[in-house]
Length: 594
Image 1 (cartoon, rainbow, N blue to C red):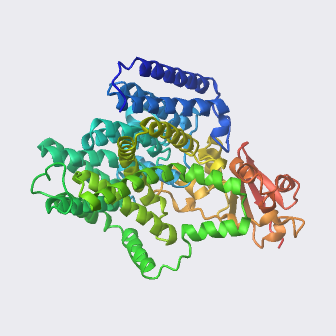
Image 2: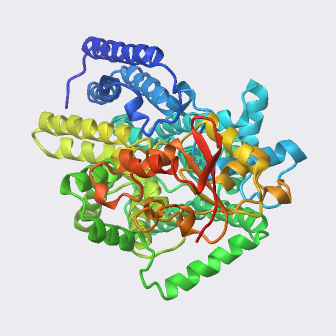
Image 3: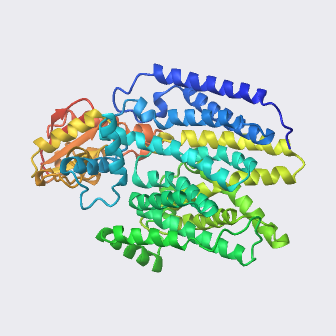
């Protein structure tokens, strides 16, 4: 145990951390906004920008840990430093001047918002309108375009989630265990503004209200919990189903403690269990979602998959096929695994080790604990198992959905594991030294994996003004009788963002696909691209498409579908004529000769 100090050293350490954050802000302010599409947001800033961010987050976490050991209140400085740096990182798309951030689903969610603007009501096919209504309300209040405001929602949710996490651990654990858990929450922030991610960011707050309702039985807390649960249902169905599972684990843990199967360190609260809360969730879920045929359809498909899984289409099958086909270098596999799943591995390892320690202690001496600790242990085991199941079986959603819940409960238990080691081992300083190293790795991997980039075999999700303008021009001026082949964009998604998800006109229907473009534009077999088609086509290329292979797969050129020379040859192809070019979005007309 570290003796109590006046905290002077920790305050100087925090001051140094804020100096790093100030330097980070200076670099951020001096870096010009994006002039066009940039394949990686990490490449938009110098390397020392990211080094400053990681160092500042590490310093803030160290201050929190040292305050936990010394019994001072300096953890407030550390937490404020962490929140400051996280705020800078999650709002980077806004600071970069992106007109929107998030391709694919995000553009369709912007379309749902456009529907509400145009009709004054939620469209019939909008399954989870809460995020859309929230974004539109904030946009009206601030005068910011809804597409831009949607970028900020993930940042707002991340900061709120961090504060909720601190409140939750403070309500469940003693001061030291709670503070030792705080540094692990850094890995739970997100940069995506989609309903599932945002709803998961709200889960720590809902759990905090649930804990406080169980502890206080206060009417105002119960009312706040009911409102939060009602709202969460309409944010996303999968989040609600997972939360019902958490409440089920709590019910089992409460029953085991009440019957003495598990010894309790505190009285089991009151005669009322979690059943009313679960009933509320299930009732609101049924009333809202079972009115949508697609949701009912998905439940049927999931049931069929579970009865005859097969394994085809699962993440495990996809990864194994990719490795077998492309034989990536070991260093690339390690980098991708570290940045994508390194933080998850740390949280699950710390939480899992503590869960194992609790299980062993319970079997040996019936060690006492609280209902909430038992709930966290059980939920960690349940969602880890679900992640493994979703990994090997294709259940329409990826294994990352239950994995984020497993990460949350791993983070909640990680501090308790550090406390457990420090109390039972005589080498306390060594334990905390290893903790600092672990936090450094956690902060580095979560920071460099926060955004999709070539580091994780992906491209920046920036949306440019050129893409919006080009998509609008194409939809308005095309000959709808001709097909569309595109690379680097999905025109129907941009149609959603521009004209609405469900309120667009019949002449704005768009169908397209990358499979309509032959490898190397067919130049390995024919002299012209037109020879590959038996009907006239439009070909749409964007800056994201032109730079895709060179930025994402620079070391695997033999697998590229399109070379820079192929793009150059298009300009000389007699069957290809340019009909629109704004510098970042090109529309070609391909005259078929096949």
